[in-house]
Image (cartoon, rainbow, N blue to C red):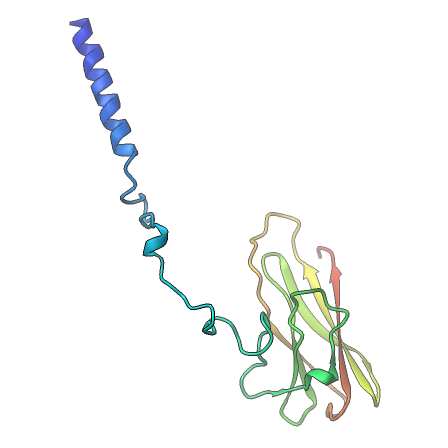
Length: 165
């Protein structure tokens, strides 16, 4: 009788092990596993609809805005991967650029300097918490109001980071 109990236990264990070894579906709403042959094929020569036009990784200015020509944007102070685009809106007195935010970081912009030759736009990233933060990255459009229309002036983009509030 004792042997029968052991045999039943071993049989149940084998049955559970066999069921766990199948990869037909993943529980709790997961997707089934795929192999390389099931993945959609893409032609690397075709542009991706997720990638904005222009330089790889660049975000285009918002719809309805007027881009500042690349030659008139000095983004040399920005880290690699940061959007390097500026634009004007309305009568040219509203100047915009993208900041970087997400998780526990908020972005804001301010005019640091306005001369007849250039406008210095400082993008500030403020850490809002020391606790656990999500790893999302967003590039919110930021705007400031200039004393006079941008015209032919150069836009200098700067970035600074400040600690938790």
